[in-house]
Length: 151
Image 1 (cartoon, helix red, strand yellow):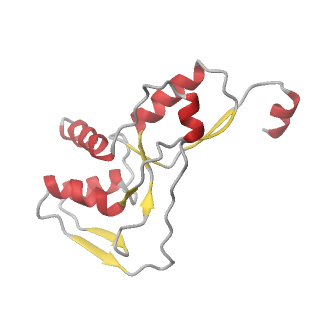
Image 2 (cartoon, helix red, strand yellow):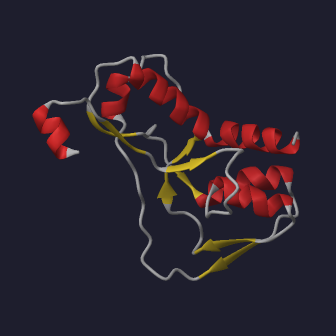
């Protein structure tokens, strides 16, 4: 990869997304899609610690829209695919509890120290169109739930 860039034989864009979620995600991962899958099956969700560590989650449709914008741009290089909006796992639980008021949430003690992952969106915002809007967690989960409920 480095050789291609240095020799200018091809242009390269390397996207670094945070946790991606969407309705086609069948894995029961620790995040929006996995928590939704457990909730709809009536299974408890287990948080590590209190669920307040900050993360960024990106809706799959946003990934596709960003890629579409980049295809038509002159950008080359590494790009964090982030909105700069931080959420925590407890935020996902709050949204799901609006739909599943009897949702059972357990917690396990952390096995490591709490770490917040917060990203600076300055670079991506300078590349994307000024009117580009990322999907909020609540809107993305609503779309995921509606898509999955209609299947």
